[in-house]
Length: 195
Image (cartoon, rainbow, N blue to C red; front, side, top):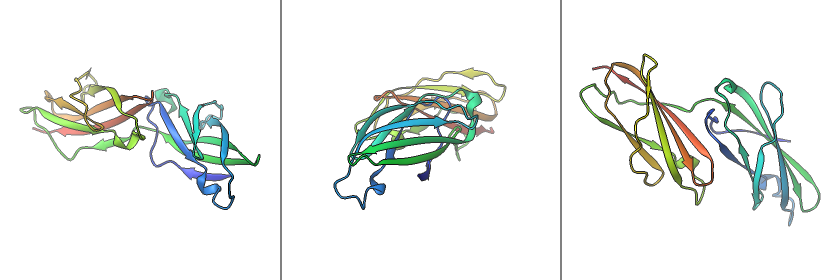
């Protein structure tokens, strides 16, 4: 088994397709390719789930995990992918990942007297040929009150959203982009309004 650690978490609201590359396990096997794959997701609770293997192309399995409930936030989720090779050999890759929000803290501190634009960059989640179909935002104020600011024009994997703060304190802006392949990508931005 080849164990790998994911480069980022999967946020609860995300629907994420993970690319699992078997190429490094085939470098010494001339002419052998991956012909099919199956996958199992095991959360820390131990109840195994069956994610969807969308495709196997050039020894890379594309495996989709559904959105998680907020209560599923935890470290130590396992995505086990078994690949059947053209020589009937079975290869096993285990991807270890966490379910958590990817939180970005803004160094910028807008004031209550200005309208400020934040650009949400989803390019790290856009595989070749995938674009952003739409995006939705939720703004949470220090009191817990929420609103839904409108997304600006989507361009080159970036979605702008303009905020006019009305209260001081730490505010959370959640962006959820729906991608053209059906995945959903989430980013959480925290910023402080101090003036």
